[in-house]
Image (cartoon, rainbow over all chains, first blue to last red; front, side, top):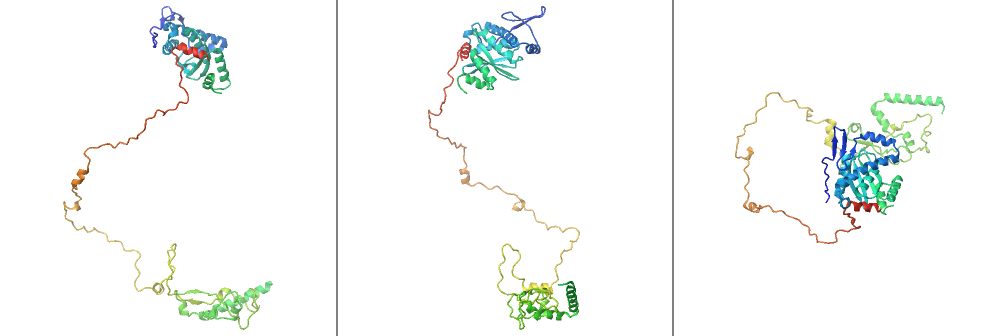
Length: 182
Length: 233
């Protein structure tokens, strides 16, 4: 059974003589990058490059979370979210949580230094790496503190993006996605 | 009317005023009250009652009398003048007479009848002042009037109030002994306080709530189940 709490012990190993930082589990070498430098990079990069960056960051988080869970397919809601949020916190992405709007899954990221255009592919890739499912994500909302990302099929995500672009409230769009609303 | 005629009439009026001012007072009054032909001519405009006896000079000096002119019909004079107008009646030789001079005074007796009750909104009585007060006003009272201001008190120590013996047992000292409770009052006091509870009787019912929609049946056991459900949208 997967523990519903995240064990952050030695999650990151700093090898000061060699000047390297590695994560536990996959022993992947990571880099402490200032968030401002990442922002500058995202501003000057193309959308495809931003999405690729986000997916790469998210995939690493998802893999480590899946390694902690052992059997992600049988993991409970709390256990899955706890390991995924723990790995996201180790990377400094923000505080990750889950909202369920009917049948729709919404990932909430609080206090994230990343922009929304980077968060959506990051979440998608993390979920794919952790669950083994192909997922698509759409950024529902982003303010100074909270970002919400809808997880769904490609068609569903495309419709929600259109509705939000036309001025519809994101909550209304999620409701409409279930077949209700206008 | 020409200018010369106006000046002539004004001169005549001035002479008449001067002449009358030299006459004695009584004769002026008599002349004032005596009916004349001129008054008869002016009768249609100022009613005069010749039957009213003229007031004596003694009575006229008193404040007790109210003077007013009564409007009565005047019989036509022996030598009537036909419908004189207000300005064209008198001949040119006669100066115009001031209407204010032509008045006959008559006494109005101060009635001894029952005084009319004063209206509620009036502070002053409607009835005339009694004769005694009028006499006081006219001739003064024998008693000297009261001074408006009393002299100030003499300075110096005030005399002490005569001593009153101190009595401790009396009510004067402000001491009160508690009133003993009557035995029935003691019995009436409750020995223990019991709350008076008011509990409404609400009958049990199994149809209190009304559900207008089903609660969420979807309860995925795993995160992947939720992810699959979301992907199925």
